[in-house]
Image 1 (cartoon, one colour):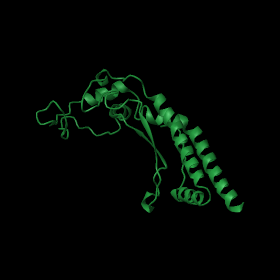
Image 2 (cartoon, one colour):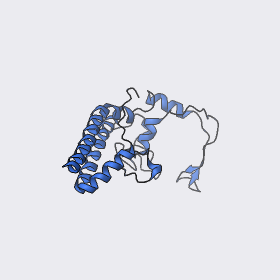
Image 3 (spheres, rainbow, N blue to C red):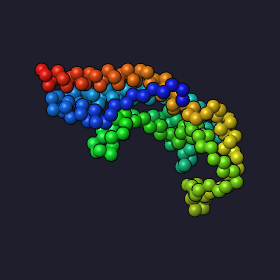
Image 4 (cartoon, rainbow, N blue to C red):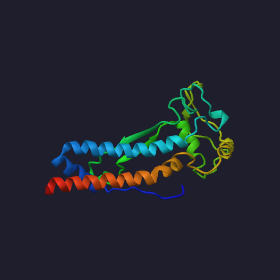
Amino acid sequence: MGLDYKATIATSDYKYIIRELNKVEPDLVKALKKDFREIGNTVRQGIQGNIPVEPKLRGMKRKLSPVGKTWNTTRRAKTVKVVLRSPKRAQDKNQAIVQLQVLSPATIIADMAGRGNASIDGQMTELYVYPRAASGKRKHKVNGQGRAMIRKLGESPSRYVYPGAEEKMPEALQKTKDVVSGAIQEIENKING
């Protein structure tokens, strides 16, 4: 996670822009939200382009399984959802306007494996869903195979998501500045106009 790009708009500014645009031209609010979604799509493309088509681990190849932790089983590995937020309450003041969600459990595991540094070898896992067990759940002893998986994946977490997003951040940052300054200019033109 090399370069540190941030495109931050204080929610109070966002609420102000939406409120003022709704007063003068409600159609501009729709356009502004569409622009924010396009900014999210720009970063989404970077992330999707960085996620491999095939898993790096043989054990993650697609298997039809109700627990869906293999590549492209319950969700396509490259699925990234763009969610547009509209914070309304005071406690939402630090909430993102655009949020990207990686939905594939296998992608998340492969991307972030090794993030924690706790050694739990020899300990029992929490109870988890396992359809082949008589009760439908099971737990097992941690035997170190996770370390082998992390070595095989290589590099440090995040392997796909953050590097893909960082690649598109300069472009997204510029688009964000353009969209916000354009909206503010539109408000001023309508008010003074």
